[in-house]
Image (cartoon, rainbow, N blue to C red; front, side):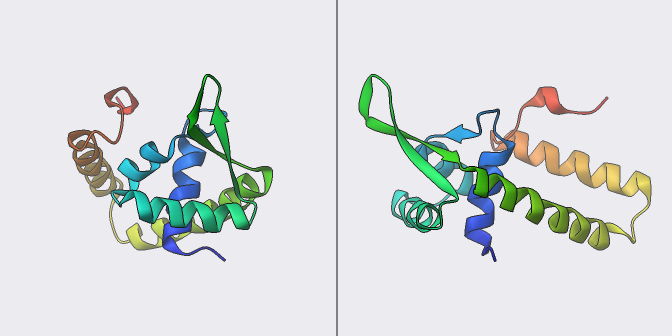
Length: 122
């Protein structure tokens, strides 16, 4: 029961460090969409009680977006299906080919500033 946009927001929050909280600007950069698009996505997810927006202490103009318990449970269930689908798509590749694809994609993400070089496998 998730469209691609909702999945992206929930998955981005889930892979962020605990307490799985980011600013709307962080989410906007990750999704590479406009602030209006992120606001629309967050409005829909908040209406479904999958995320909550809270004011930042000391700066009432800024907010954090956090997963609710229901949001965390939903994305955890969806990720199982997502990983199964990825494995199905990659099933025709050898282990070495999968490693090369993963390394190439990691390099692309690093060049875009979307991941940490320290997460690279040895």
